[in-house]
Image (cartoon, rainbow, N blue to C red):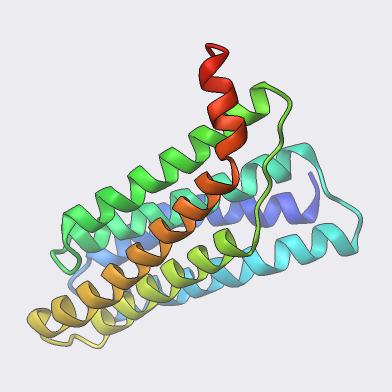
Length: 186
């Protein structure tokens, strides 16, 4: 296993621990959840750099890295929703957006059309990470839940807006292929 893939797998394996720690009433556990989330985010930046630097780009890593990113980010959005710090509808629309974009990418791959990541996806993931980090940080600081809910709902709402705007741009860029595929029965 390559070092970049090991980093990706470590992010996947640490996600349940982050989730568990976020639910504990102890502020130390919440700080640990935030710290592990930040380390996971840093490893995400580092694994791509290492893959390119060490010439260890692999099909597994190319597939697994974005999937693990979505697992980490969406899981924690739903944790924040379950803790009643982010409205559930925001997390559901984040999930819907991811399924839509990944569905179009998968359909494209079936026809030989590879649609890779771009700056919009990376910006979206960064905004989601900031939102989750802020939420976990306020949770660890034991701010009043009403205050966290107010600020985090606004931040999550703006993140959601950006995510969907990027999705619409992505769909617009794919419009010729999507329209052509719909007329060919595929």
